[in-house]
Length: 136
Image (cartoon, rainbow, N blue to C red; front, side):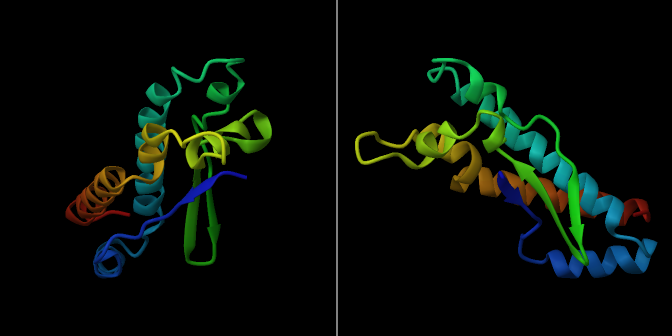
């Protein structure tokens, strides 16, 4: 169990149709887009874990590489922490508890508005690159 990320920016359907017309296969573009998204989130999460170094297990549970899961026409990738491999405390760090404030830097690294903007921009650039190259 982990956070899931997908391609959700406005206009994706239009770019997907263009890419399908150009190459006939959007899967390689979507795969690259999701891999780059996962990499972006990982690079933002790592530095936020420095203050949370009691045992180091939570930091070790950061997802470094993940596979893309396709269910029909829907693709997702895991981002954030591997909950079963020591990442369970990340839930409390991200969302807080009645006695502890959430770590806003960690929350923002995965779910913040700035991160969402970066993800949209990254995903759009990759899709447009694949359209321009005329390949999937």
